Length: 460
Image 1 (cartoon, rainbow, N blue to C red):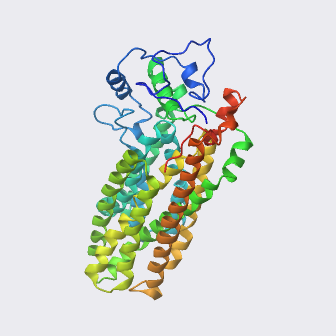
Image 2: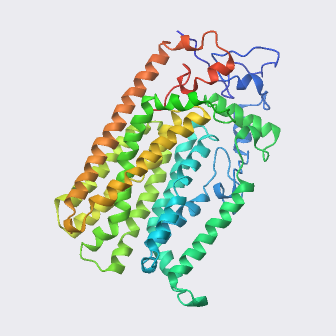
């Protein structure tokens, strides 16, 4: 059985000193060779002093990942995604009644949606390369909560902008595109200068700060903090990995329902007997509550590192909510079902992405895996757009039934299967059954093993 590394106050290896560059690294304790190559800038400092220095590293990844006002985000305490606003902008537009009057709506819909797919997986991948696995969940949740907030306030903002109807000879819907689109364009242009690459080349960090970031990621068994030369084997590694397919199943379980919920909640509420205006206003509270719970669940998942169990627990809320919608025509019960259903959808999106990012290692492996998982989930929007038919109004029993199946079978069931599989993999590593994979290998060869390294423990 392989000797497991012992953590010290800097979370590195069982020594208080930095190894000499003339020494060979202990590949069992430092499989990536990072701790050996990167001198410890805080040698001799206490645990408290080290934590203080780490918390003061300003990770100004970009202005759209940090707050405009006050201090910049920190490795331990931030950043608070300013990109919440950016990701919310495309969601504002389709929710406006004025926008629905646009004659070229189909063309503009297609153009708008064509620009969205890369944002969410790209930002999630980017964040995962900067933060420890136990820090990523809440940041992913805060970022994704922009979608819930957009659903909550998007219609109200668009309605306010639409009152500019006639100014400059332009209709209200045109001003929605102009103002919200301009904000997106400006932030996009600024990102070319403000978004930094991987931590190993971040020029906004001092040499010591860069060393701290690289060492803390190495302690977390992460090699995604630096550039990596592309090899086709990295892609095939993901294609042959069972976690890719369980991740796709889990994500379709929450993302497919998310599409259905987002597209048809106004119709569902309207069919409860409310007017168009009031129906739109009644969509605000469920989204707002979902946003708050999403962030809270992200924080809990980071603390417990039990992302699979949390997925299964939240899926029960989703099933309960849609059961309430399908089993009665009482407006009050159905509206309560909308609230509960939202709790089983929104928190699971960032939690599932974080879970996947936690369990794939390597720049290309992680990026390709997230692409597969998120891409497959998004394809389920095709299903969502066809299950709530006007012919099934006002109960929409087939649509609700499909959502129940997605939550119970794919989200809950998929999370259960992956949780069990990862637990078995961890057990094999603890028993030393994979130690032979690193015997006689160089640092580079061990690095290329990614999450198959025997010291890499999967997040459950």
